[in-house]
Length: 115
Image (cartoon, rainbow, N blue to C red; front, side, top):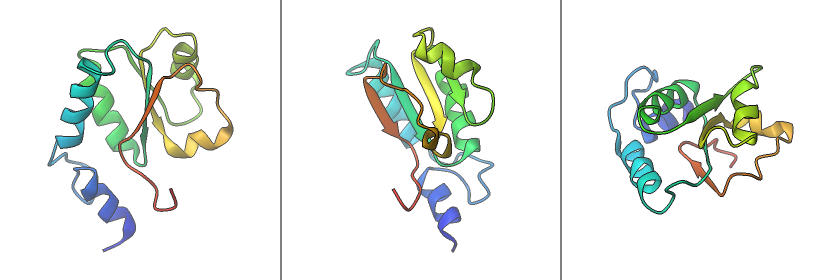
């Protein structure tokens, strides 16, 4: 299997990335956000946009969550201004030298093989 298919499976999704088959990582993130990271500013990094959007949707029910995975920097600016608690971010966007110093924690939901 390709590295991409394996990374999707490791993240809890089907190889095509369309269906979440295990929410274990999501449950752990929720547990952390409700306990040790309660009220903290957190960046959650993703390799795949479909994972990012799924997790953002789930977290949005309980937290102020934004996304950054392309050109639109609206949520990134809200996070930098502390108007959002959580930023779900595509790892490739992090190569731009973005200031995320306001976050106290970074969580890697899924990783590139080079990381």
